[in-house]
Every structure is written in C-alpha cells, then in structure tokens.
Length: 234
Image 1 (cartoon, one colour):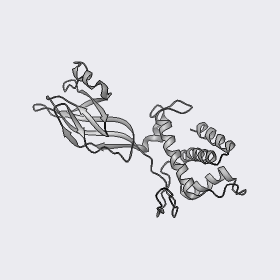
Image 2 (cartoon, one colour):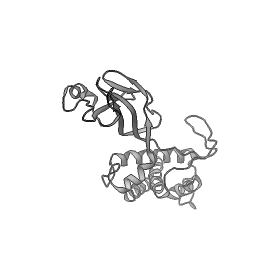
Image 3 (tube, one colour):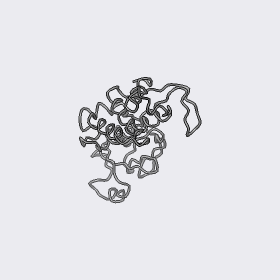
Image 4 (cartoon, helix red, strand yellow):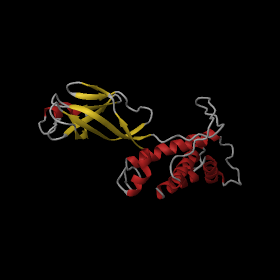
C-alpha cells in the first residue's frame, strides 16, 4: 500500500474527509502513529496477545502474516572451553528470538547438526552439571542463552561449534513520507518508504493507527471503533 493511499484512508477514519474536522493533524503524526501501530501489532501477534490467542506460527494466518519478518543471520564470534559467544548480534533490527541452529565437529568426526535449546542464564550451572542436559556431541544436543546482546552456545572440550545461525524476527520497516519533518530529529524525509506488509494486513494496522491518533485527540468513539475493527479483522 503506497503512502498516498495510506494517508487518505487514515484521514477517512478520523475526518470523514469532507468534514475536515481534524485536518490540522500533521504528516509526522500519521507516520508516528502508523509506525507505532506496526510495532504493537507485531508484538501482540508474536506473543498471542490478541483476541484469538494466536502467537507466531500457531496458525496458517500467523505464519503467512509474520514470515516477511523472519531473518537468518550467520553468527561470528569467539570460543572458550565452555561456550561460543557471538559478536554480531543485530541490535538495531532485532525484535524477537526464534531459534539458533548450529553444526559441531570433533577432531575425529565430520561436522553434524546439533539441536539447540534456549535456556535461562540462571540455570546454566545446573545444565552444565546435569549429565542428561549438558552439551553432548554424540546425542547432538546443546543449549544456548542470551546475555548482553550476545548469543552463547554451550559446548565442551570434545567438540567445537561451527556455522551457527540465529533466526529471529526483525523490526518492521518504518514508513516515511516525502518532505515530512520529523520533530524528534528535525530531519526532513527525502524519500517515500511505503508499508512493507501486504494490503490486507496494512488495513488492520491502519485501524490501529487511527485508534492511536483518536486517543491522542481524545476522540473516544473513534478510538474504540479502531481498536474493535483491528481485533475483529486480525
């Protein structure tokens, strides 16, 4: 959906166009509200915080809607006797963890794939001590943790970690409207950046954005209408 269409639809949700009731809303406010609506929609549907209680990949619709945000990143980093630690965590684009995959190899055996479980940092000493849960090349299992914007994949001295890959949900691309001034930075947008989501999903986010703006201008009826429409069509 291009930005001209998006703006017309947002104004229609708020102004009824001909009335011009709220025509003093500036373009940056539309941009900020829609970008906020994108992030809120992603968080709500990744966690299942919607009326259908569906999180990511719990239904065909969730898979289809969220798959554009799934990214694979080959991890680089350093190894100790206990773990491999990444040094290229995607801080600026990261939204939510999905999984970590890796291969492992020993001096006498070729590389093999490992099953990697996400664990709590508080439980690391217990997991390393537990013979049924600690890293094991023969069983093809290990665990990872997240700390200080790094991924730690645990190992022992019997094998090394090779080709680790982080799969994660990235932040949605923020829209921009040409010549719109961002009051937070003072910068003027030099390009149009359209919504990256398919049109039917953009319509849901439009209702969310209209609800956000309606709340800002204390239009309770429009706020409730936008919230109900976004959830009903989600």
